Image 1 (cartoon, rainbow, N blue to C red):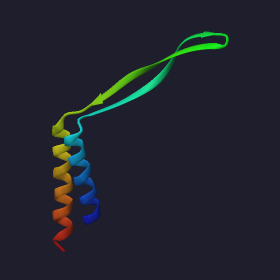
Image 2 (spheres, rainbow, N blue to C red; image 1 turned 180 degrees about the horizontal axis):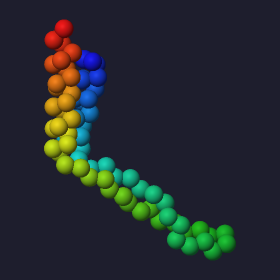
Image 3 (cartoon, rainbow, N blue to C red; image 1 turned 180 degrees about the vertical axis):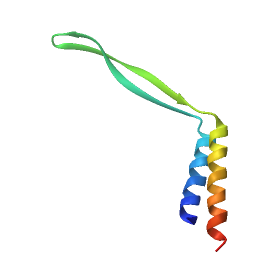
Image 4 (cartoon, rainbow, N blue to C red; image 1 turned 30 degrees about the vertical axis):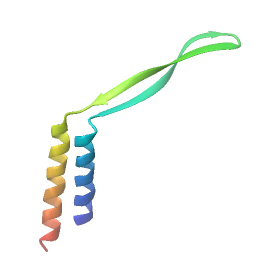
Length: 69
């Protein structure tokens, strides 16, 4: 349980520091025989830093419970 607490705590820190994830998809605009026109369309996924703080709290509780043995 201690290892899981450490991993969850690190994920919480990452969620707090990095609050946006951006990725691109290719979209076909036109297909004119040999010539193909595409464009990259950006997508963003955002979350609140409070989610990362909550995940860090859960990881901290697991760390504390794991070290109490």
